[in-house]
Image (cartoon, rainbow, N blue to C red):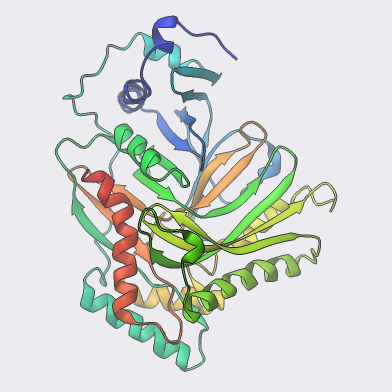
Length: 394
């Protein structure tokens, strides 16, 4: 652990992160800022040279942050942790580089000062961004399921919102962390990707320091009223069936590699901000099973999951590409820290927005089964978008 000045150690988290965002933008550094679920520590990584890669090998022990698009065929972004520090309250730990020391020489940035961030031209909102068009798409999904082409399909949509004049990137990220403590809260910003902000509840792949592999199956969505006893929440047959499909998808991936030694816990009801979901957890001891490369193998098998596409996978992807009417880009891709403190934690990029200066694109999807109600699926996407909207427009 590297010692830092007393003056910097006393700097508030918000002020330090504002400095970091400003410094990176002014000096051409790409950066990631994140907080893992149920933790209070924020971590900041920066580099002049993010790399585009085809395949991810979690076993090569490269330390950094991964930002991957929805489309498997497109390249992923790997941000090396040339500069890496964490902050928890007033405790700052420099893990690589010397960014905190550089920031100690930067004058305090006043709250009234607007801090720029990377933006790039984005695609238009989805053709199904309005209520009528999305409900029509849900009906088309149901028809495809009834015809026997698909078991489940997960259509998505995006919509444009205006960003308040006093919007601040790092402060909004901290606000998301307070509002949604059980989410993976993050910012990823680079000249090539632009800037993305999110608070996702869904882990994709985690390999912990004890070499245990973790993943989850998350499905089913209901609005959550604060103070509600989650033990009293009831789930419809549609929601239970949707969750079971995702569980079976994970287990089918284990079967493909002939892995039988796994633990399964759930499903259980979990709170994710303003929503509740059904979640089942899976765990594998990679040492006991003699499968040290399991993280990379399962990442390749799991993405994109049935929770963001549908089942069967390939026909679902083909259906979505034909009918959604827009490019998902990094929405429903995955992101997270790689090999930091000997752990990798990758999450599905849900509840996210692409920031475009004075406006932003919000993204959300809904799982459609044979008996889905188009009106309810529309409302579900609205609820999911409100995860970010409520904090952005605080």
